[in-house]
Picture (cartoon, rainbow, N blue to C red):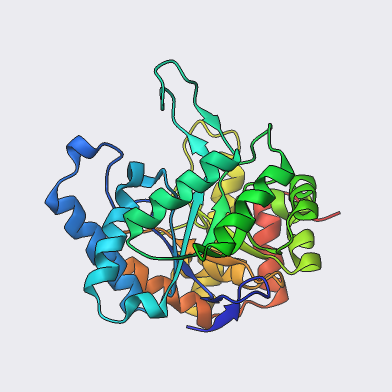
Length: 314
């Protein structure tokens, strides 16, 4: 798989990354079984052997179990840590934690950022996180406080580079003004059925500042993959069926699967989007790599865009 620099910083990523949100198979520790761990480990190893070097986490995935499973794989697969980019996120806090009655919320306080990073380091079993991101924008964010937490973690050698996830362009700009280091990545939901970031300035901001956009759920939670269909009560069902038909048509032209074309559509964008493949099925993890060798024409790319819009461009 081809590689690219992440945001012009010190990190190099493969064109596709692997999203580890599902590798624990549960959000409840009491229900976590050896069989679930074995399946998650097999998925991570399949991704590594298929050439993925970018592995994405968050402290809330599996309530920390996903980081733990991945950490055990890192320790057991010789040389893996030196060859991969380990990314994780913080900032989401569950209801009733740490005190009963506390609401579900977002927290970018200095204390929480530092505490979350240290807990992730423990679960992952690493000395340094390569890419540490803020998960969802905290409306009470104090940019200088966040910058202080980032500076501390970087100075202590606990984090190499920093980024954000699900931010508005204005919030990215606000935070970057306070941060002495560049934000190198912005993780957002963008795919052929979700065009917001093509129209709200997010991708243009990434290109202008050198940030790398990272696509979570690049197959629209399975909609754009094989067998995906819109829910009958989805108000966009007719348009989405047209989109799937167009993806299938372009897939046939390239003799690949719908999944591969949906990923290739993202890779074609000049912002250098890195889609995060999230399947735990080894065969699908390996198949997705084919997207890196498919080059859509401008006409094919726009045919997919038009089908997603459900209307011709103005």
